[in-house]
Length: 195
Image (cartoon, rainbow, N blue to C red; front, top):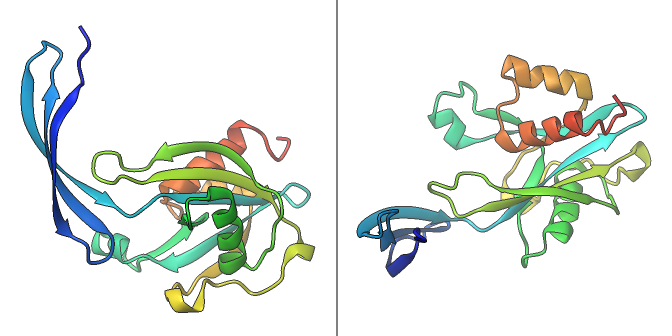
């Protein structure tokens, strides 16, 4: 017997202050065929894209450092996070969005990116799916200092780090961002530096 069917979905808007938070009530069909009523909250902030910028000749990656209030509220002493470049999708186009975010955040203008996978980042509470990319960079592609869009109050520091050092930063806890860890591990597993 097939189970996991859903019926009688009702949404109640709890907040649309920044993005939208909905309370969703529905009936879920259990494995034994019975139906049970369930209630969940789902936060919809849109979908996003993230990229690992890498230079195979120098064995380096470009990451960012910025203040993240939610991490500060949950024990990150200074609130600073080292992360791969990322952003919310503009008009639904992941590839165009990530190229734009790379230029805004890091100052590199890149032409080619490669989508490597996609993942739900917190499927129990957030609707977001994240599209993951890798892309090569070199010094000649630097067109500005980066730092984020002026109107977005991002205050981003651009970091160029050796790949091995970045992997070590995951081990030491200096990098705690899931999307960044996933991209660094992708690079390691797929030997994009020829290692």
